[in-house]
Every structure is written in C-alpha cells, then in structure tokens.
Image (cartoon, rainbow, N blue to C red; front, side):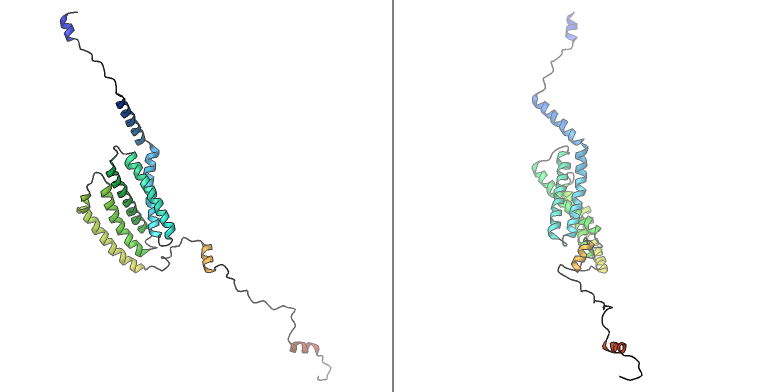
Length: 244
C-alpha cells in the first residue's frame, strides 16, 4: 500500500459511549410520548371538562333550593374540572410549566369552570329562574372570557382590554338588559317558577303532614233502625170502625 493510499484512507473515530444521563432522558422522553398517545388519558381529560362544568352549572342554578346539597355538588364539579386540567395541561402537555405558571393555570381553570357553569346553567334553566338566569348568563360570558385569556399560554392577559374584550363586555351588557326585560315580562313565582325535583309522594306528604287524619264520612243510617213514633202508631192501629 502506497503512502498516498494511506493518507487518502478515512480515519474511523470510535463512537463515544452513551452517558447514563442521556439514557435516562431518552427513557423519560419515551414515557412522555406514551402518555401523550394514551387514549384513556386523553379521553378522561376531555370528558372531565364537560362533567365538571355540568356539575357546577347545576349547583349554581339550584343553589337557593338546597344550599348544603348544591354546595357539595359544586365542590365535586370543581375537583373534576381541576383533575381534567391537570391531565390536559401537565400530564399530556409537551412541556411542563414552572410553578408560577402552574398556579396561574389552576386558578384560571377554576374561574373558567364557574364561568362556563354560570353560562350553561343560566341558559338551561332560564324558564324556571328568569331573574337569576338574566344575571348568570352575561356574568358567565364575561368570567369565562377573562379566565380563558389568562389560562391560554399563547395569549397575553392584556388582550382582556383589547377590541375583543370590549366586544365581549358590550355583548354581556346588552344581554343583561334584554334578559332582565324578558324575565320581568315572564315573571317568577315564589316557588322558583314551578321548577320542582320532588316526587308525587313528597307533594302529598307536604299537603298532609304526619299526624294529619282525614275526617271520616258520616255514617249511613242503619236499615234496621226503628221508625218514628208517628209511623209506629200508624202501623199498630187497625180499622175497626171506631176511632181511638
């Protein structure tokens, strides 16, 4: 072999060994990709938003009927909505945000859940609670828009005061005035507009409380009762031609 061939021959450099830290990062990236492609996780994160918002909407509208019961339902809805937020924003996210951003996202998600709950609940039960729905619908629009802008990582919170924000505020004010007039024309009864979740048995129990006894009907006269005295005298008398 000539010297020129030796110089032209490519020199092979040994491949460096993969460091242990690189292997750990690779395993972490693979597990993250597996979580992102997990169908159950994406399904739970998607459904959790709607289930949580639905529970909150029902609790916000029906709260005056049973405050203790619907407060618990609202708490359950908040927990479900926040669990869905953790799944979508942190577990399935491409990059996990820092602690300050995490706190902002959780707080904005909580605010967003109540905004959506007020909007959907007010629309669903407007016929049952017109005056309450006239307040919940515009308030829900405003609160949900503000919460969404804060929650969105690609949008600055200054967009709240942009043209879009002013348009949302104007729409909320117009809807409030219109819905108030509509609620006044519909009227709302003291019983909550006839919206009742009770059963027929509960209604009967309310009408007839325990210890209440129905008055018994008057007893019919017995057929074997003795006739009046006049009737008895007529039956005992006989026509013999003499007056007695």
